[in-house]
Structures are given as C-alpha cells and as structure tokens.
Amino acid sequence: MAWKYRGTKKMANIALEHVVADVTSPHGLTERDILLSGGVNGLLCLFLVGKAQQEIHPTQIYKVDPVWPLNLDQTSRHKELLRELGSSYGAMTYMTSDVSCIKVSRKSSQPADVTMSNHLVITTLGSDKAPGSVYVLDLSKPLDFDASVPIARDGFHELAAFEQTLWTVDCDPEGRRAVIGTNRGVELLNMETGVSSRVIRCKSDVLSLQLDQSGRVILCGLRNGAILTVDTRQKQIKRSIHGSSTISMPSSVCCLTSLKLWDQYYLASSMDGSIKLYDHRLIQRGPVQSYEGNVNSHNRIELGVDPSEKVVMSGGEDCYLRLWDIKSGALLFKDRFMNSIPSAVCWPRIGGIRAKDGQDYRCYWQEHRLGAWLGSYEGIFYMDWL
Image 1 (cartoon, one colour):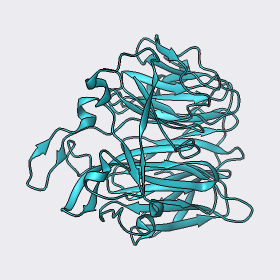
Image 2 (cartoon, rainbow, N blue to C red):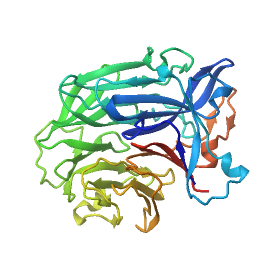
Image 3 (cartoon, rainbow, N blue to C red):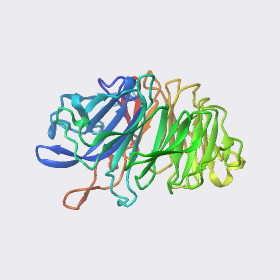
C-alpha cells in the first residue's frame, strides 16, 4: 500500500531522514519517531510521526490518503497501518540556500538495538548570496514542538561555512568527523571544533560520497562519472581519476550507498539511469550486478536500501518507483502513483527503542519494517509491503 500526506507539496523532494528522539510533552519526556525533510527553496521541516495530538498540540496535522493500489478494499487493519504527521510553524524554517543533504550520525558505542541518534547533519548548497553551510541538530537535547521555534533552539546551529557548493555529506561511525562533497573536492570536518581540511581536490564536482564502516575510506562519486576511493589516512595529494582506485560510470554519479552486511559492496547510480553493484575487492572487473529499467537523464535521485539489504529502491524521471532484488538484480516492483519524480527515500530505522525504565517495546516501524518514506515535489508518501 502507498499513502500520500495532504499539504506536504514541495516539502521533501530533496532529502528525508527518520530518527527517534526525545520529545517534551505534558507528561514529561517521551521517545518519538521524528521525520526530517528538505524541500524546495531551502525549506527544512521537522515532523512528529504518530498520533501527535495525544501528546502535543501542533498547529498542523497532515492526514493521509491511500494512493496505491486504487482498488484496495479498505479494511480496518489497512486504515491503522499509517500514522499522521504533526508539526508546528516553528518546526519549519527556510535555510540560507537550498538543502542539499541530511544525514544521521550516531556513535558506534551505542547498543545495536537502540535507534536513538546523536545528531543530524544538514548541508546547504550555497548560492551567490550565501555560502554553503553545515548545520547540526543535536538530538541529545529534547525537541519541544509546543515551543514557538523548536527548530531554532540551542541544539540547532551552523557548524561551518564554505565558499563552495556543498553537494553531500556523510559522518564517520564515531560521530566525530564528517566528509563533505563540494564543487572543488572533499572536505574533512571536525564535528566538535568545526575545523576542516581538504582531503582531495577535484576538477569535477563530488555529487555523492560514502564513508566505509571504518570511517577512514571515502567513496566519491563525481559529475564526470568517476568513482574514486580515497583513504583519509594518506596525505593530501592530487589524484588522477585514471588511477587503480578509480572506476567510471556512463554519466554523473548521483548516489553511492555502502552495504553494511556486505561490507565490501556498494551500490552506485548515475544520471543515465544506470544502477550497479560493485565489490571493492574486484573493482577492476567492473560491476558484479546491474539493475535494469530505471529512467534518468539529469536528476539527483537517491537510492534506498531496506534494513535487511535485500532490495534497492529508486524513483525515475518517468515518475515510476522501482525495486530490485540486490543479489539477483531481478525487478520486483514497478508502478506509478505520483506525478513527480520520487527523488528522496529513507527507511525507518529499526531496533528496540529503549524506554526510560530500561525495558524495550515494539514500535510501529518494527512491525512494518518493509515500509519506506518517499519524497517528491508532489509531497511526502509512505509505502508499506505487508
């Protein structure tokens, strides 16, 4: 099933992230699911996921309508599957330029079954009037949706600014460093001090990047189609895109996604619609799997990988959503239920949420872990496979 949230047009076509955070309510602190989205003209939005009016009083409730399949028999079970989104005017703000990326950072010392994140990192593209900036939303401090401006509190601040175009960001497993892809190369940013240093200089924009699980090796996807592998432990040097650690895709690389369960593998997509699976150990042999049928010519479209890493998802310029089996490359799903490109995607983070008394409880997202958030110019969607 797929649902569309009313009134969310232009709010989430750039980026989506789903996290768990403490929220201030009339009953004290409570852990809640939070959705953060980046939309057109620099719009950044925070949403409370669930029956928001039970704990807070947001000024806006975004209800849902089923959009796929159209002939679905609406049983009571189906109606209960999706939660509302709640927000307040202060939980939406316009950044100084377009939002380019949102990433979650969580220290690896946290238990694997805890979905609480330390902070969210947001980058803005930059413009002729404003630099490209890196912002941090500290989730160790409670969110207060009843406050007049909950997003502009002490926990949300600009960490660094660059006279460059900032395309993408990723954080190391310790949450201490971030790597930023720019129009001039890759910057390494200390998350505590805000001090940065250039890791690599490129003549082609770094449109996508991904840190490996060690936090030391960076995959860089360039506008010219090259994918570079950069070791941050080496001294900064000018690297040739024709080196042994480089492969090329047919067009600009718009997304890179490392697989955690297959730690030597990563997915890459380019702006000609190609989606490939690569193995670091067999890099010179080319892709080990291809995923056919996607449509793209010039758009930055995210790849989504489910938590079990069995399927990869992508939207296309034809407004279709497609899913493939990662191992076999088989097309599992293809359908259209929106009139704009599904350009942003994220899966809710799964795992037991630690209650204040130390006991675990199951949340909605654990029971429906195949579901995913989708963002397009048309609005926010949620899709669930039962």
